[in-house]
Image 1: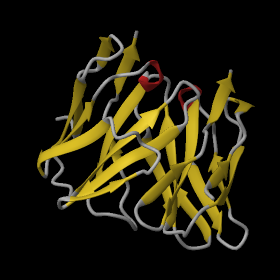
Image 2: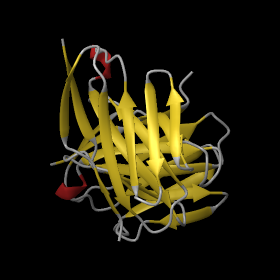
Image 3: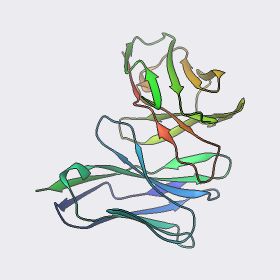
Image 4: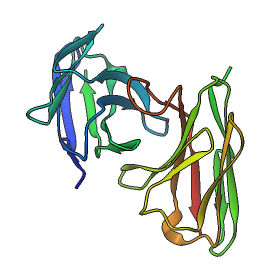
Length: 109
Length: 114
């Protein structure tokens, strides 16, 4: 079966660091994506991992462990504009993209 | 310039009607997708379309049919609309099917079935 789990909601303070976890069980694995989605808007791409390890991109980093079926998105120096939902998505075999339920992050002043 | 565009942005209609949502991408991508995001914010893939090859999510009712007049367009036609079809529908495109390419999403079409 296909299953992706993320925490439903998280809260953090402006300037802090937050880690959003994602665990997955999918039919095949061709890569893991993180997307950001502000309320009422389309998802926008943040990061892509296909090999184990950490990918860093400015204030955002994403980690993958394929053996554990686990990823996290790390957001540093949080800003108010980072308040959004963060979607973990896995591409399995046969062009099968599966999205997690999303984690709604609230950044407080 | 908008990379992936959808029309209309909002669509309100009665049960039983037939409606279409249009999607166009000007990125020169080879693959296009349709997603449904329900009230619980789950984003589920409905179709992917690449070079006339259609892959359908088996859970999608056959009332939904994608139509691609050319590589830059993938429209979604829905017959006999039901209340449960109310959702936001996102079109997306990627340079190729699978692998390293990310998907670029359109702005979404909020469909409300009364």
